[in-house]
Each structure stands twice: as structure tokens, then as C-alpha cells.
Length: 84
Image (cartoon, rainbow, N blue to C red):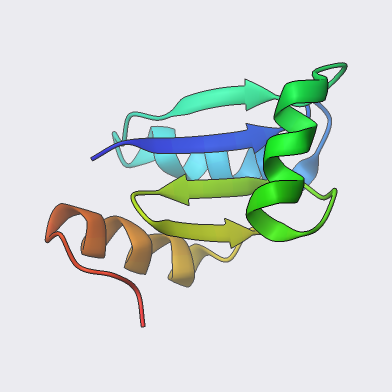
């Protein structure tokens, strides 16, 4: 399972999402969009918005942070399915 989070250092929802992942022992790649034009372009491509966090897990993409949705994404990735 590969999980990527696009974030900003002072974003409270980004901090919450990364804390959840760390607390649950879930490895992730953190890409800061601060001053990173390529990362900004990628989140716009993925979501149509310039907002963080953007969490990508397999084929599933979440804009913002919703713990229940994140749990579903992780469960589906571990079981190789897509979130409904």
C-alpha cells in the first residue's frame, strides 16, 4: 500500500491526518506544497482545487481530512478494492 499526503507545515488538518497515520503505524510519503509548483499542479490535477491536505491511497483521493474516510481508504488499499 502506498499512501501520499500533500500538505503544508502549519495546516491543522494536515497535522491531524499525519498524526493519525503515525499513531496507527501507517507509512506515508509527505509532500509539502509550500513553494513546490509541481506539487501544487498535482493536487489541482487530482482534485480541481488548491487545498490541502490531499491524501492519495492507491486510486482513491481525498481532499481534506475525514478520519472515517481515511480509515476506509486504508482498509480498501489493504484489501485491493476501491472506496465506494
